[in-house]
Image (cartoon, rainbow, N blue to C red; front, top):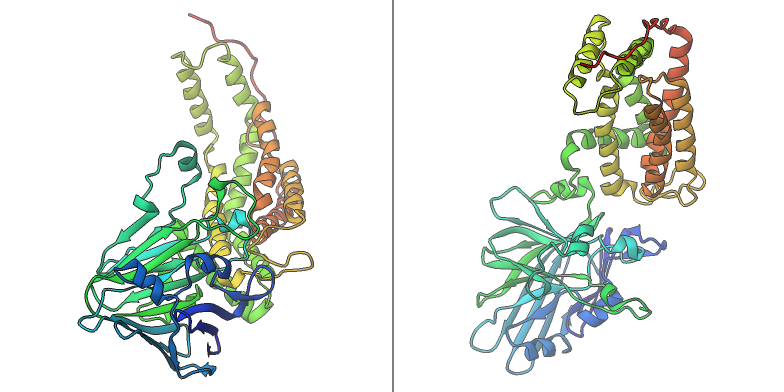
Length: 499
């Protein structure tokens, strides 16, 4: 066993494999120390650091043989070096691992048959990460990542068909369920939402292979087609020489990832709106570290700041809606004038021209009311990515029943309250349209949003709920201190004369 401040790694002399790799600063979904080795799956598929050679029978023998460990029978305190050796008089195998005080390990593996070194590969079977996740979350939790040497783009493979791919079988299936990625590679490995196991190849000839291997859990009672297939990774070289590489096994914490050489912070990908998500994360962590010491209250404070900053835009939206409401009788009059025509009738174009002329006369931009919502979308998506990917939010509590801001509300209290606040805001906010059908659609929007948010992270629902509460307060002030303009009287109604 090798132990540091951040990890505790247990080996077996049978096969010289890793039986347990516990990240000491984290717990799993059941509150137990987080072991990123899936013991149940690995008992069938093989354990991390399993050895592969061209002869399958020899590989099987080497992975079940008893090795001599140096030093023997001791718990080593990192930084430390641990070495395993095996010889049957014909083949000599050596595995040497040098542990740092952090999350990375230098590894060298060799198999010598008396005349030459055999090409070897090292496997990490059984998936990677938090294996206590429920099945519906675990199915899409793990991915393989790799990056070619000299290329900045990180590639991600899951080998799990998407929803549409499963229905239409439109996604290609790799041969034998595996994908081979040739070198030279700057990095390759496995990850889940919050943790990563990354190989840094030691030479340009080293290649990477990923695949999903079928495995039957001990208590499995499901369909054969739904049987779990944990992701497995292999690092190999076809050259006749030892396989040397560096291995990182740790959290996807930005501070930890940036400290690696080369940096690994691009493993946390906030997507298209990273220019919003990263400042949101920095601001939220600053509020947590210096003010609140609670990520839930940090989300609340950050939401308040965002809404105060956006208030001038919201005020413009309200005034635009009031102006639209003021001229709604004129709009309705024009719509009634042309309601007898079909939508593809050329005379409908005349109605649109009259509407635009009306907006110009009253200095109204009918699209200005959409601007605040469009501005909100990057913030919503940014918060979604921050809550989904930032390990700091994993198992982070807020108050009472909300014990994990990265998971859904177990009692649906936040989504229900959020829906109620959306209804209240609809009631007190002026509606820009006089069309009853559109007004009914707006009233259904809170139900749609509430249903959609049921399974979202409770931190994301908290952000939206806080924004609603602030919006209600702002709207009440606007309604009190900014008088509504008097509506314009519509002229006499009548249908346009058909030609």
